[in-house]
Length: 538
Image (cartoon, rainbow, N blue to C red; front, side, top):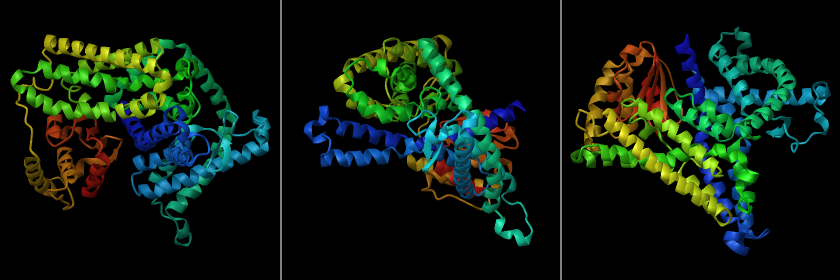
């Protein structure tokens, strides 16, 4: 029962992450707009009313879509990740039901809002707790409302999509039937939100006060826990309410920063005075400053004759972590062979965030070097350079701390990190890899339970899917498959049929997490393509 519950939380968390992959690009565009609309950088060119300013305002408004429409995006996310069949139709159903929910909620508050202590008719979207969802004036339920509605629709879809109705009711089959069920389910849900949500909004305010009063220790606990839960896929539940929900500021820290970055760039004082919540956005510092220290420790603790091979492995994964903020490739190189290092890594991440907070460093979205540059350093350098210098110096000191601590533990405990394994490091050329994968594809197509589907030797992701399917026990061992940003999440019938993690790594995965019958294959940013190929094989 416990394993099943954890598995459901993992899948739910992975599905929640689906829209997050869209945020990096518009976030960078917002950063560029902040630069090009800043008169202190661009001079008179960026003055109000100029064609230059108007063009960049237009681009800025387009980039704000994902931040202003996050509830809609999250309403679509759950069906994509959790629908067992016809996911596209489930997305359509979820959007229709979610909008219906908000129309119901708006009508209830318009007619009976005073009964719930809400003067809805005289409130505007400038008032806390009121927003527009697709032009519908409604309570600001954030991503919580959209996720609850989305979860209900997914449950209805998975259970009743193929429900057999009499022929004379055939017009109500499929998506129409799910919408009809959802329509009536939204009436009591909207009423419940009208009664309960205003109290929850008060609770959010109290929670904000608690976290803001928790100081440095609160930042340490928040960051450490966010990293510790990565292996089991539950870290989403720690940081997402902060970044994309209302746990600290209305609308989430990411959206708040993006909509205030121009204002912050013109502030001459200590930014921590006007944006103290930014202390919780130091979560990403470990990606930029910790990863190089870890990689250096792996390099210098490996035998000299193996260091060129270790460098060839660690350089790209370190650059991926620093530049793009994707840390799973480097973290999963040592998580399974030396889990103690991962615990230490998580604690150091929390310590770095806490020390930055102690020295008054706050920032906006900063999970990688690109975001550091475009959303923090460049747009705010003219007014906040002293703070950024402190940030960089503290970060580099912690890079050294990561290196020293990891170096000491690896040598003292004789940990089998990259280059120190008993087996020789094997790096495959592209030709060798494709030949090996093609041979395995033929074997898998006949023996893994696939329906005769194969993959071209030039389709690397297709070949990975074939080999992963074989290593997971074949199609007959697969219950369902979903994915998050970097992981293929599979539920199998028999966990004992799953091959060891080293086999998956040899096939191109970064690692493997097995919790009973819940399996996560760490694939990387190509995971959505691998999942598509995987489902085609099934």
